Length: 118
Image 1: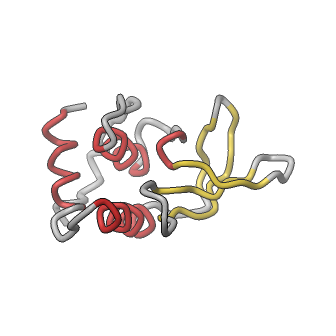
Image 2: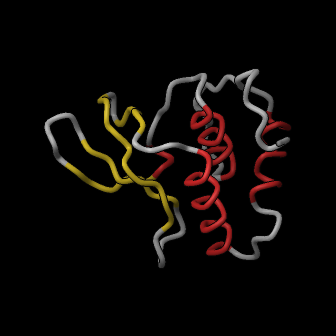
């Protein structure tokens, strides 16, 4: 994973965002547009189904609505999830964690994935 590639993705996502709230909305919009839900992820080592991704007003973070296999539902910060390393979700997740100053989880850009160069 190349930091300059992550920086490029961040720059494209935030190009028209001014301030923390607009940046959070920009992240939520791109993640919602690119990641098909429901999708599987891991949260604290347990598999969950991500049913919705978005930004909450008043909170400067992207959140995800998740459901555990036995039906328990809850909202978590998107940064706390982990996705399969070769998925589109993982590449954007790595960029989001990098943007937050967190260590990105392993991500492998897929050769068939052209975003943001579409």
